[in-house]
Length: 156
Image (cartoon, rainbow, N blue to C red; front, top):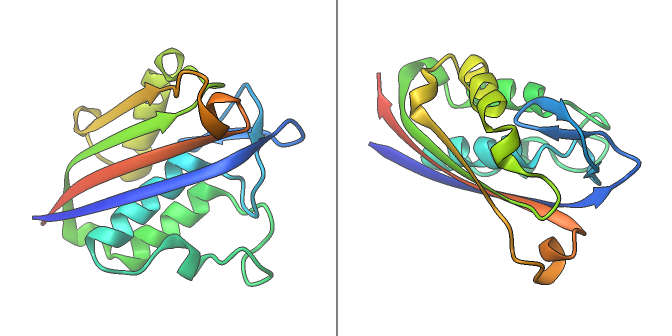
């Protein structure tokens, strides 16, 4: 069994669209070189970590090597190629979105369903939780949101 953890945080921007879990949703987006999808970024890092393949920034640095505003869905697809995804079975994925601006309970079903499609797995293997920081710190002041992910894989 292989286990990987991922984390991402981005500052909010009212000028950018909000992408989360590969979906465009209502709310302030993120300042980022990519579309800033913290959920997919944390998921990518969890996959890479489970297989000791460095981190997302190694493959997609925030500079001219990476196309500006690249879709995080495209980044996930590339990560799945890097780890040779078809050689593994996802046992489970547990995700925590930490945000004072986005209510995960209202969009959880859509997020889980979209991740199931993107990863071609049964949605019963995906859990997404929303947490706030009770108005404490950068996240609590609505300046940023973060995501933490853990994944368990087995060889196919």
